[in-house]
Image 1 (tube, rainbow, N blue to C red):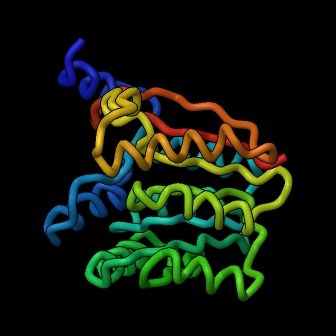
Image 2 (cartoon, one colour):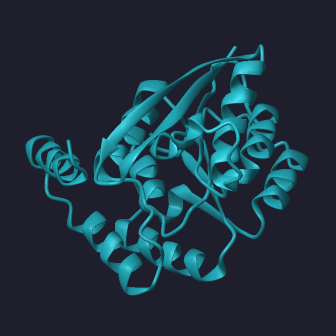
Length: 221
């Protein structure tokens, strides 16, 4: 089947299961207009994150990689009263766009956006004893996946759900001899999860508007 078919099925899913959402549509339009890369999660994936927040009963979420805040908004909306998403973004321009998007979507009070290198922000969160988080979503620079997962373990508790995006890479994750840093980062995520006795995980291959990829999901024991 073709990528065109995958994208059409994604459209069908949205039409069949989702209500119209002008605020989220505006987020994607704004991100495009502001020159942000079109690497947001798809609507179906955003809804999955939202459902995971509700299934988990999460009150504290950590997101590594904000971009324009599209996935952040999906998760923030699913939080109960008093819940919070701490989201980390390197690029000041992306962060500025995200803040505007949070305001438009009415979730600013539920979001703590921190700007700077994620590893520095994670070290600060650890020093602040900001954890434990109930759900951690990792969707940033892929070579740092093992570092992000290491911090995720420090900021978690038994029962914390960790989701790591973009781990299939069009199937290139099979290439043991390749030198693509993003593929190596995906393989490193598998190695970390598979080699950590405190993690019980799996991975889901996905096709859709974003092509062929997937995510790893694990729970902390």
